[in-house]
Image (cartoon, rainbow, N blue to C red; front, side, top):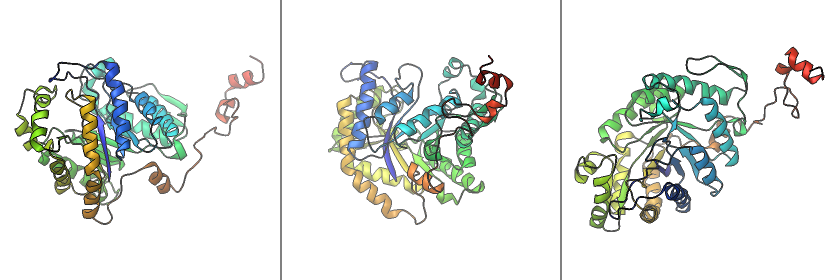
Length: 391
């Protein structure tokens, strides 16, 4: 079982002070939070991808590479990578490069994105969102698993004899999760490929999460990847805690009431009753988190959203310290009730082992490492003339 945190990178005014962090402060805070996550023993840090104000989560590859250079153990992930509006060729290159830089400490969460204006900004049509997700991901998989790709599709220019570089570390692509709040199509896509399914699990009641995960498990088994219990599931979650439960409620209430996403809507009491948001003591957070297994079964990854709604960095780091105190018990309790045969969360090491060992990821296709030429190049008369000095 992996535990971690994810951020959406919102820049939100602190309602108790009226102070809005600058973009620079929020970016630097993200790095500090990721480093703190490793310090307390968490397994995963994930960043979302937004290209519009008030977010600073664009260019997740730069963020993850920078954090990777300052950490040693924590897995770096996305939450999510926009497979609809980002060129699969760029995704293949960028995340294979981060794989090498971090010695395999990277995976991805693919998603469609829910901000309508983003699609035309990147030359895409939101009405084709599902088709984009299907086609682009199919191409990404080929770019990582095939050394030479010929491709013709609907949404990008063709590829002829294309090799994505660098090749995945040890010949094994990063593990992919497919993230969703409410889309059964994403659950179906994850199941079709045998990838992981991550249900955001922060806005919806447990009955919705249960139905989405059950669909994914059933379809995972249908496609022959294993039993439903062997499907790879991740959940989101939110909490705010203090040693004293009432102190937590009093301190968090103004942040909740003014949050851009759920503020000015249901009361804090109604929202915590209907969704996984937990406000209270560390013991209450521990018990509520352990209860998620009651309706989704054994799962592999639990990520929490902590740095949202204008909470200052100091408060977020205090939340992480409190999480660190209950983390050993949380791990032990999930392990204690885990059914035999349920797989662990995939890691680079486990994927290499499953593939039969590490393979040399460098590809020259019988060519010359110095010139980068290949047998395919030499078949081209114009290339041959250049090499012979005739042009």
